[in-house]
Length: 281
Ligand code: GLN
Image (cartoon, rainbow, N blue to C red; front, side, top):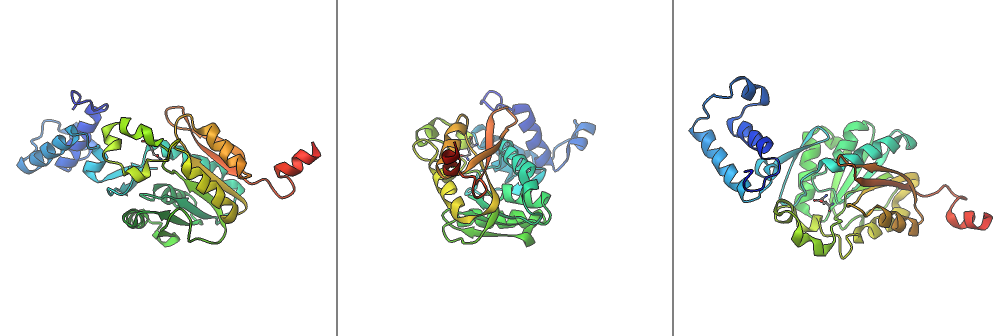
């Protein structure tokens, strides 16, 4: 696996081995020399062949942990990334500004990982997740059930928030933000296995933010927050787009690699928007 370019070959080999054998890390540590058995050995060699062909370990196993919770994957969903946990952390850090039973909207929900993690932490919150893919929306529903928050959320098949009305306290999204021309150069694990629809953010990778910020004007409750993830180096452009829609920056969060990865925005309270400020100045 290392020779085939797997960055975390030893860790991934261990994960595949434990899954194939149906044992946990403790069992592996206690009896590393234990025999595998023909069935488990066959399963493991099938999986290794798939991994050598650049299928990510998470796709092979069909699930990935996010925020300490298990999320089942489908070909229609992005694999949840640890980087996206920084969006969840940022939203939670800012949630003190919201009422104790906030209504959350997650645009382009995929596996549902962001919404489910937030509902898991904010026990009185409720939420709606939307996705263009019915397969993704069904997967998100399933993940919400598995993680015990199914009673507090609904998933809709929709282009962003087109069919929605109402008033949300927190709008979150990890939209597709890869510039279209860069997709061909991505690692095969991402390019060939994550759905293109979940990656391709148009020419600059910024198209979805216009949709999100434009809709916030219509759907955000007074005092509500918008928290979005973006790609490396896109923070300033995203903040500028938010500003064009009247949103002010509140806070940013870095991912585990130290890269600014998510930002929170809000509309200024009435009477303090920029035009009024400019007149006072
Ligand atoms: N963070 C993902 C990647 O770089 C992209 C996900 C997205 O476009 N939202 O692989």
